Length: 249
Image (cartoon, rainbow, N blue to C red; front, side):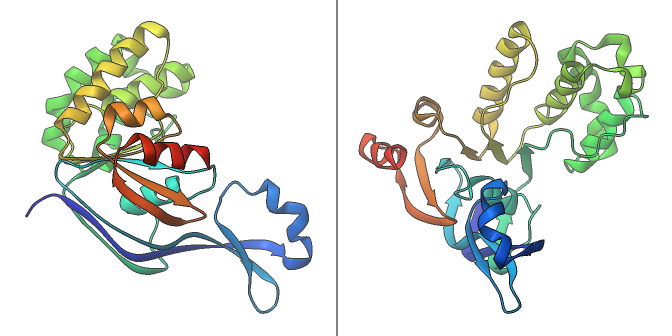
């Protein structure tokens, strides 16, 4: 079956516990999740992060998600990845998904780099055999050498990020999801990392990236979805006129 992502009238609502309508004005600006804020009987507060999103994406699509902070871009990516369950509506995903966000998910600080490599591979859906096939290449690209056999709590933040980046980019995904462009270490490593991500995008059958960068969208994408307050308000081919409207909002 061809690779695709289909969302049909998808809503995602988050309940905000410990917050009531009378204190909403004081705390709304501190909330990290965007979307429409509402109240329910009894004063309980919720956030409608996605509201009726319908999209049909297929092979060859390179889709850029554009919108203000809190528009729903990250929520939409995580719903596509299966991290968030829709409150209502339906999500259909056909193909192996590689989410290039939350790179530190599942890290065990007491385990070695090699053990964490295997754990992260399992979270990405690889079989133990596939993980072993990729292990040597991941170790070489990360440049960690003998550090792979030390607990990752002994790593600097840059070392750990390089390892997790190397794991996440080792496979050939059918569906690649990116939340902004990835940074991973010093300038020398970043140059290698950018080439690796570009190659990963080329190998993917379907790619979706959230970004505020016009240059990045124009370089990588052939379609754009514009989000405002949890809704897709425009979707179509990348054109200067569409980007002008989206980025001027």
